[in-house]
Amino acid sequence: MQVTKLAIPGAYVFEPKRFGDDRGFFSETYNQKVFDELLPDTNFVQDNHSLSRDVGVLRGLHFQTPPFDQGKLVRVTRGKVLDVIVDIRVGSPTYGQHVAVELSADNWKQLWAPPGMAHGFCTLEPDTEFLYKVTNFYAPDHDAGIAYDDPDLDIDWPVTPDTVIQSEKDKQLPKLKDFNSPFQFKEE
Image (cartoon, rainbow, N blue to C red; front, side):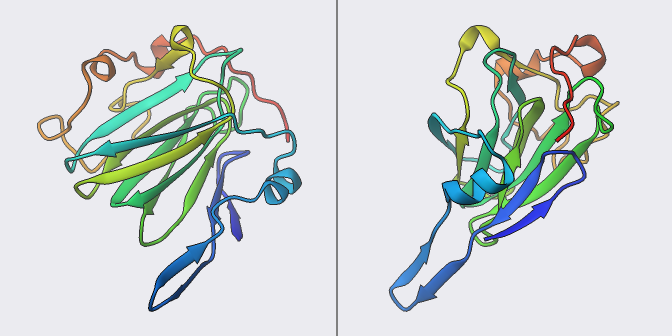
């Protein structure tokens, strides 16, 4: 498995190998030993799976607040997304900055978003299936987010206000400057 460190401290792209023949393919998509070496004490407790039927579905930017904050290992098994994480850890050298990675069933990449990241994705193909492993259970009272179109974040999403498809809840998310972040940056 190839691992690439991203510009945000603690964020990585994982590229599992895929072995194919005329029957199909085989891939080891997760290995605890790899995570133990790179990110010790990372334990996944829940797997989530979503389907977005249309191009332009934008989910996010989401996170859970402490003590229910989550790290996420995300991937696409059908379709394609632009996946984005924003560093919202106070004191981080990349606070308020983002990285964007195209994840698809074809490129087989996975993105690790450590706790303290706002996370979102926008579908680039219809019927996109998105899977993610998380390090903490869903806690509705700690579910939060920031607006995908916050101009201070300067994210180049592949949608416009006229074409984006969002949940009513996501349309109400605050801008980063209006959010008092409880996340603190810790050196690796």
